[in-house]
Image (tube, rainbow, N blue to C red; front, side):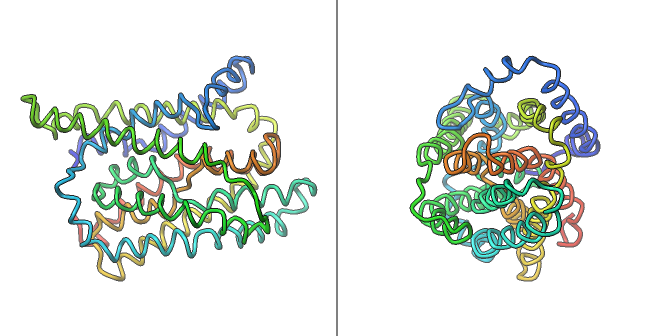
Length: 347
């Protein structure tokens, strides 16, 4: 859906200002608010799936899912080139590029500044982040770059299906771990809470709006758009607030861990973006393809790190760093994708 110039300007023109304000506010809350208060908020979870975050994700993605018309889902076969590129980057390049970057930066370049006993755990954490591409949040990124919603839905579904079979073997190969217990509860609850339920709610709302009311679906989406964007910024504050103490106590370590994660996200996203251009895909496919390739399923990564290495391990900290930088980095990629439309011949 083509967004109006006013909508684009309000959110994207001051994008970095919103990000900085939310990060500073979140960290400040995390430092000043009593730890017990934040701990209670953090403990509102089921199988490492945080309920406040889940509610915010619903508010964010249901308007995006309203765009999906099930009768039009058959057209996804037109996007096979973009789909193959996305799958290839996600499963054949991304985990291994992250393993290389983690090995280079954490085990070698930064090793003198990191606690030796935790380096392997930090490495494991960043690898866990990159093994599985993002799910729910990619609907936000796709919407912000005016991506094809049916392609985005199909790609998320394909990735989730592949994840069920490929997750354990890839983690075992890269980390040398065999016979570990996959946090299936977290995996299944995340997919249900973040994808299935909001999708069903959105389709029910779409049916009612189109068939039972006098409302225009495009106008409804336009009206609730600011609510979705507000929820995105609130979630940014929440994530940084919950981890404010970690950042305050370990800013240097957090910064070092963030380096390979940042490079990995930009590398894979821009690789997918460029490959789509090479094969002649449209911008509305290349955008979500790039953003899916750069995103991470951070809920599953955090849960797996805690399951394998413990709540206070370096692996858990590394996955949390991934959580913290996910939204700011992905929003910057959205800006890159939107500002390069002319490269794709798209006005």
